[in-house]
Structure formats: structure tokens, C-alpha cells
Image (cartoon, rainbow, N blue to C red; front, side, top):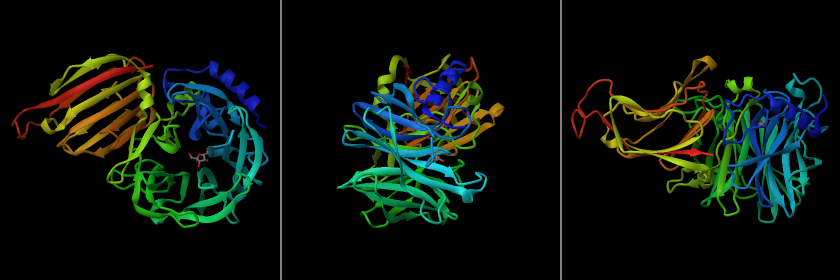
Length: 489
Ligand code: FRU
């Protein structure tokens, strides 16, 4: 089959009509129909935020990758635009893989990976990945400029270019796989077309995976952040529980030198579904990140509805005083707020109560008085399948989903200090939940699949066995000090 933007648009028009929208997001970005994975080319250009994404318009499965495209004035209300790139070849005949965007004068430039097999696609030895350029003046129609960086000798997996400007030069970071070792490579250019190889930026140490996908490299509070999505990290206790991770290393770097890391790899989001995040700058200088709110090889029940995959909320990144990356919902998310449903200060006594009969698109802001609680488990549930709760024995905040009919069961969790008040912001959409913990300290994002008619929100506080607790022996209370719910539009 040969691919083109015109064909992709026709396909999307007809598929859009057959969509079942029961789990389609109300305020997150998803493809019009068909498959979506990584966010690509996130950028502010000519008065609009642009989001491109890995897209297969012809089915709800991953396939020859196109770049889908949407734009927004405020990062939360998105307008779909025509497909930006189709794998028209020859340099990208088997897919336009992930990449980034930069503004070069009055031009929007997309730098992406051309994915192609020279021969039988079942043999990895035939795989070649090269970096390509496409440019646009109007931010909608792109002119393909062809290959700009060829596959380095001996390598096959070589992809996901992230381009940034530093001093008088453009730099491009790409991820490569050398045998069983992941590496980052850097290139430099004066004009985005001719690139000079500056060698290897960083090599994955043994425990850090065989491939680092989707690199990003930026400054935050004077530190270099290398954000990437490693494949092949082993699970360890509560860490690295998903098939692949996404996270960051902090460190120092000078052009021409290797990256010197300080400290360990840290996961960015501790939920079930967050991958391939990419960052960009707003005109007022905030660093925002958006990720794919899914995980490779996890079941996606929405495929039977004619679409698959969605992007996360935009999140602002900051660095804490003790050098931890913090993620908070970008303040633009407040522009979604509609009616408020205040909830009085309440205390639960070994019981459950319903807050709302139907929660579709909702932000819930709450504070739990952990220090004065003697409940063993307390939290919030949505329908039968989702619970977000404090486990006082484990001293953890747990996100538990239970959709056995789709093979999606299990918990993800983060450590808590129960001497403090816990503050949470939860964003519910038709098939997702994003939990922001203590003003950016942690984040848990997961896809959820509530059954029709089972979208009620409950609060619960349970004591399994009465025990002596300070300061009020025998008190079974769990003080939900403050809750506000707001519908999102
Ligand atoms: C990450 C990734 C990228 C690649 C793209 C292909 O999810 O595997 O490395 O460019 O997806 O769709």
C-alpha cells in the first residue's frame, strides 16, 4: 500500500463516524479515529500550541506511522488539523517515527525518524532508521526535505531526534541501541540540514536498559535534565513496575563533552500508563511536559470502539530545592473548570459515602488529615474498578484498578509521610485518571474503563481491626478536611 495525507484524511473521515465515544476523552487529546502513541513535535508557533503524535489512521493497532496533528490556544481545548506527515518514502517508507519541532525564523521545522527496511521486515538486520526534516510556513502543510542524518555504521535502532538551540548552534539528541546497550548520541548543525556527529552523549549502564527511547534534554533551574524512556529496566520493589519506564537523570553537560550525571534514574509518573513524554517551552518560559497515557503491550479496551491511545494533561515541570523534578497540572487546566461542588468537612467512621452519582470529566481537589487518622485504608473510588487510597500500614498512596474483564488489574503506589496533611488533585476523564500528590511531589496516571452507569464517586475509610492509636485512643475517624469537586468542560 502507498500512503498519502489525502488517503489518511479520507480514512479518518469515514472511521470517525463509526466511533463509540463511551471512553473517548472529553478534555484530553486523542486521535480522531485509529491509533495514537507518542506525542511529537510539541511547540508554540505563530500564536498556537501544536501537538503532533504517532498515528495510524487505518486501524486501532500500531502500524505504518503517520504524524497526527492538533493545535490549541490554551493547551486544553484542541482543534484537529490534517495529518502532517505520511510515510510516503523512500526515506520513511515504513513509518514517520517520533521526533521534535523547532521554530527557525518564520518556519516550523519537524525533525523526525524515517523508519525503513531494506528487504524483509522480519529481519532486524534490514532495519534502518534515519533522521528527516519537514518544514512549514503556515504550521499546517509541510514540505518534506528528506534525510538529514543517516544511520551510523553498525547501528539499526537510531531514532527519536530532539532538537534544541544553544548559542549559535542547533543540537540534536538521538537514541541508539548498540547491541544490548542503550546510548544517546549528539549532532550539531548551523542550518538544520547539515549535521556534524559529536559522538556519544551518554551510555546506559547495565541496569539502565537496552534502548532509551524519546530523549529530551533541557535546563531547569541551572541543571541539565536528560529525560528519556528506557526499555529493559528490571522491576525492583515498587519501582519500574511497567513494561517500560519514563524518567530522568540530572547532571552537567558542555557541548563536545559527555553528560556527567548526578544521582540515579528517577521515574516521572508512578501510575500504570505514562510513556514517551516530551517537553516544550511556553512563551512565558514554563517547561511543560506531555506524555502518552498508555503503555506498550497493555490492553486497550477502546480499540473495539474505533480508537486507541490518548495524551496526558500538560504538566509544568519544576525542580525542587533538593533537586527533584516536580510535575503539576499546567495552570491552563484551570480554564476547564465549570461548576463547583463543594463538600463539607467530613469524617468517616468505618464507612463509605457517595459524593457524586456520575463523574465523567471532573477535577477533585482534596486534603486528608493523615496525622489524625486511625483508619487503615481510606480514600476515593470510582465505580467498581478504581480506588485511590492511603494504606496506613504500608504508608503509601495506592492507585488500584480492577478491570478483570480487560486484563487490567493491579496497584501502583508511592511512599507517604503520614505525619502530614495529604493534598491531592485528581483529574478524571472518560477513561483516565491522573493523580497529583502534594503539589508536584508525585504523580500517578492510569487508564480506567468504568462500565456504563458505574461512574459514581465514593469516599471510604475502613478500620479492619480496632487498635490503639495516638493521640486519641480508639478513634476510628478519618478526617477528610477539605474537598472540592469541579466539573471540567
Ligand atoms: C516510543 C516509540 C519510539 C518510536 C515510536 C514508534 O513509544 O517506540 O521510539 O519512534 O514509538 O511509533
